[in-house]
Amino acid sequence: MNNFLVPNSVGDSFLFSVIVQDQAAAAELLGWTEDEQKHSGYFHTLREILQQPATWLETGRQLAAMSASLRQSLVGVKTMVLTGSGSSEYAAECVRIPLQNRLSIPVQTIGGGMLLTHGGKAIAPGRPGLMISFARSGDSPESVGAVSLLLETEPEIRHLVLTCNKDGHLATTWLNDPRVCVVVLDEKTNDRSLVMTSSFTNMVLAAASLETLETPEKFLTLAQGLSLKAGELLRNHVDALAALAGRDFQRVVYLASGARFGAARESALKMLEMTSGRIWATCETYLGLRHGPMSAVHADTLIVCFLSSDPLVRAYECDLIRELNSKHLGLAKLIFGEKIQPDLAQGEDVVIDLNGLAELGDENMPVLDVILGQLLAFFRCRKEGLQPDSPSSDGVINRVVQEFKLHHQN
Image (cartoon, rainbow, N blue to C red; front, side):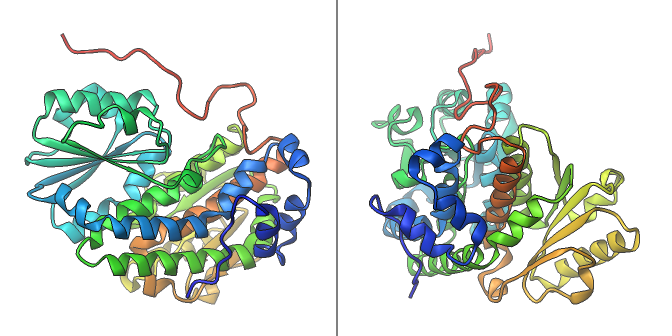
């Protein structure tokens, strides 16, 4: 039974305060009045991070109930394309490997921009196919343009839209087209902040439901298990992340393997977005770091390690971490995993060790990894004197990418 407190429209501040009552950094911010929080520019972002465990329960129930209808979308499919732009593309990357392994068909992640410029040529052979579009608003030019182009040029590709906005163009444009199936997640997931937080993790979770359409009760159990672990993270580790975000680093490198690399990409983007580029952030696989990127791990670099529970994968990861230690690279490390070997952490490194992660499986860890990335970026944004709800004060980036000209092949 999940005992995580579910926020509602009345008394959200109180409920969130109870969730993080032992975490002074978040509890203090929630103790301010709503007007003060809005004036300081974090009202939406903090809530949208903290609400994630509760929203996962709703997404679990919603997608489990839709399993029979979603099975029809997969009938006869020989190839699958996952698409989105920015965070939405990284959400797709989090589920690509698990979907490919469970469904036994080729699965690609292709950015919406690539589909606009190269269309069906970017998609692996094999028809009929299914394209799954991930989109918070469903209003970005790439989102609508890619679906429109492929409906015209690839008649054997059907479409599934995962979106958080019932009024967006992706949700409304093809309502009567039998080739397009739309899943609109709960309105709470339609983040009001510029940055994507709960929208990201809920789209990842919703897509993961396609792995268990024959056994929806397993998906519901998974959503409940992930919600419990996320609640544990928030109740016990926010202060450690807030303190780490205040350290004197100027770069962050996020390391991950397999499906979790999508979470590393998203975490790096969160740090860039929420610090308006003041903190340089990148991501790499553990084995890939040796091939050049290690040269950028300087004394001012925070290294975030999402540590696998798979014995083989972890062996490679631990070797790399020990190499970083032996070379004295980086300012500090954040290591997240289960049963973390004591020798991996040194000095003022931060270790977040949660029991039960191996049981949930590495393929389901991205939604938990990303919460760490979100909180690090949130608190660093505050340290930089920026506003998490709208960190791009000069308007360089926006909540929804602004319209641009769509070109068509002659």
